Amino acid sequence: MKIAAVMLLVLMIMVPTVPLLSDPPQPDVLAQVEKSHTALLNARTDLEHAGGEWGGHRELAIKHIDEALKELGEAEKWAHEHHEVK
Image (cartoon, rainbow, N blue to C red; front, side, top):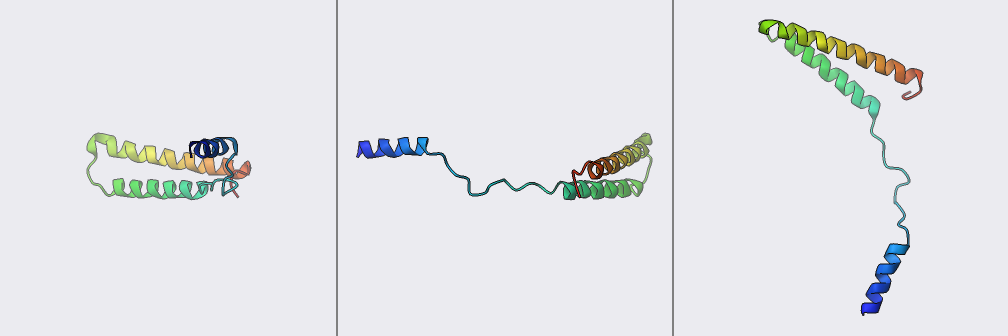
């Protein structure tokens, strides 16, 4: 019994396992970027309707969101130019 268990263990170690899938599924990067774009637009709208100036921080936050949206646009442009996405 012990010999059989040792032999089975040795075989399990020596024989490489074969993955069931050749490549792991890749995340849908474009969909994630689009989801981020939508979330930023929603955050911007919420801030616009939040009321009050919050010591100028609300307007500054909106400006940062606009900059982030611009960066996402540049990233998408770069990805299309370099065939990262179709």
